[in-house]
Length: 351
Ligand SMILES: *Cc1c(COP(=O)(O)O)cnc(C)c1O
Image (cartoon, rainbow, N blue to C red; front, side, top):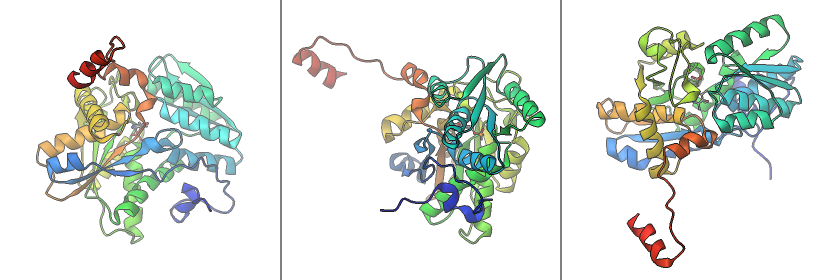
């Protein structure tokens, strides 16, 4: 049996990967494209979830991190650093451990999901919490990267964006064509930028005959691109997109304009409703930020934005196990009963 090559080797024709590049891989990518048949039937479209929670550290960040850390090691870097709402730090910590180099992760005080923090700590990263939000964390991290040899692995690192193009490649490979529409959560705006670059690169290479409309969705309390100005105190249950000053904002807006797409906000209530729906009716447990794409899809579908038979892909960016506190707080409580068959029967069949 031979294993499939690592993600950045599989798509090396589209990436700056040469024979001199050490491949730091944990088997990322090749995530499932799951048909959401019930939801699709409701709106008369073909809708799929690209479930990025199935990456090694449970989010799409691994696609960019395998590339960024491989390139960092290629140039001889001994350490990587990032600011993170959680998933970037989990991924940086794991890939740095794999490469045998140091990871330093800077997190906003008290606003990181417990699963993500656990990952960064367990992988041995130097975890530093600052008295400030994500945007302030990114500012100090960029400052340090400028005056030292440490490699910045936030999505402002072009290798991150390049690696994340592979999500678009896989969707096209699985569908045999580009989707009509891509729905995607937007936080720091790197991923929507990467997907658009990926679809365009595949189109230029003749692998697909069209490119999708890019529909980005921000959380209502953290929607700088929708409102047209930065937000000093972003707030949302979807902590992975709790960002008030997106580093790749201009690129995201260009992707949206060039693809005839759109950017809109969804409320925390819409996000949590979509999060529960996809978990209870499709068997997919994603994290709240991920559900912004699905909430946005439903909002657009209800407004009649799609034509019959169109293909829509919603990117579910991270795994629900990342944030167990939100999960438990938003699910039905456990039913407690005495241990008798009669009580059990009542509990099972009457709820
Ligand atoms: C990072 C992240 C996002 C936002 O991606 P950007 O590239 O910052 O726009 C969305 N969902 C999850 C789960 C993430 O980890």
